[in-house]
Each structure stands twice: as structure tokens, then as C-alpha cells.
Amino acid sequence: MPVSVNAVRAEPSGARLLVVDDEPSMVRTLRTNLRGHGFQVDTAETAGDAIASYERRPPDLVVLDLNLPDGDGFEIVRHIREHSGTPIIVLSARGGEHDKVSALDLGADDYMTKPFGIDELLARIRVALRHVARPGAGTEPRIRSGDLVVDLERREVRIGGREIHLTPTEYDLLKVFLTNANKVLTDRMLLQRVWGPDYGDESHYLHVYVARLRRKIEEDPQAPKHLTTEPGVGYRFRSEDL
Image 1: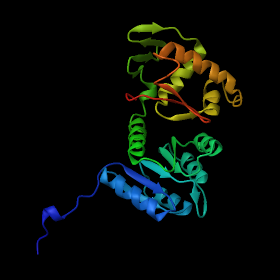
Image 2: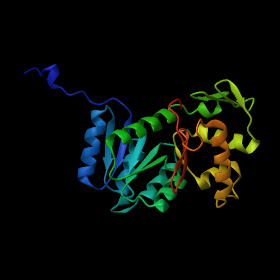
Image 3: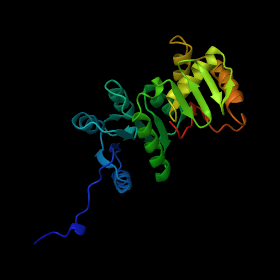
Image 4: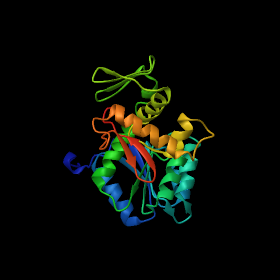
């Protein structure tokens, strides 16, 4: 007997996500919601299964819990970062600052604490996928975020066509933010990328320069829209253009 076309449910054809969580109810919730928004979804409930799944069929993005029965999610982050730049969003009940900083320092792209809103998770997934789909953005002659335009070749910064004068360190810091737009960057990551590998604990340097950048690029430095603070972790440059 022929099967009605309307009775056949189309398989999702969007980006492939790997969801790693040992709570069956959480896995079901995530799988249902993500598939409902067009994503292909693979799942794993242990660290071993997650690594095996990743190596068997590399996903476009990983949603990762840190608490797993056979290990720690940090090891999965470390393993993936040894091989690729696949975006990783940590989704965990462990909301302590130490866990957030550790995951981000190891190479996770973002961190959300349970309980969470599915709409926010979807938004962060879209941002991460959009960013990785443009791997050359950081090497283009110009980077644009709203009215802010940075000419990398000339080292010029303009807002609304008006040139903004930055010191060399301010410029280097802004460049790191723009080439990692919408990603959480820890203090240590920023210090090492701008000041060098011997730095990591001198957060006061960073805070001074972030404050100076905000005065120069934000409409209201006291309520920044772009260069935002992630309390206890670091900073994020928010942009819909990147």
C-alpha cells in the first residue's frame, strides 16, 4: 500500500549538533526542541560515547554537560580542541565561576547554566554557527559591527564615519574582541593574546583598557551594549553583524 507523502516526516537537514548529557529527560527535551528547529541531533550520555560519536561523525557544534558518569566534560573540551575548532557550548548545572573560567580557558565557546531558556540556547547556537561559518572574517581588510568599522590593513577605527584614535594596545584588544565576536573571553585569554604568554593574572591591566575602550566606542560607557562583562569570567563583544 503506497505511503502518503503527508505521512512521511521529513528529516532535519540543518547543522548537525552533538548533545552530551547523562540525564535522559534533558536529552529528550534538547533533541525534540533542536530537531523541531531544523537541526540534526546526535546524542551521547557518557564521555566515552561522546568522543566516539565525535570521531565517527564530527558535528558542527557540541552542546556539553560537565557532569558525566565516566569522566568530566572538561576532558571532552580538551580532546576536541586538540583536533578542531568545532564550537562548544557548555550547558551545565555547575554555575561556579571556577568551572566557567576553566571550561572557557580550555576552549569552550560559551557557557550556560541550568536551568536555561531554550530560546536563549537556540540564539547562542545560531551565533556560534554563524561565527564558524565565516572563518576568514578575522583576516578580511575590514571588520564591521554596526557603525563600528575597523580597517585591519590601515589599523583605522571609525564609528559612524568618524575616526577614533586608539593606542596600539587598545587597538590590539579591540581586534581580539572583534575577531572573536559573541564569544566569551576570559581575562587570562585576553591578557595572553594582547600582552603575551607571560601574562595571565594581571587583570587590573585588562580592566583599565576595557574601560578606556568603552569610553571611546560605546554610546554610554556605563551601560555598554557591545563590550559587556561576564561576571567573574571575562568579557564578550556582542555583535549581530559578525
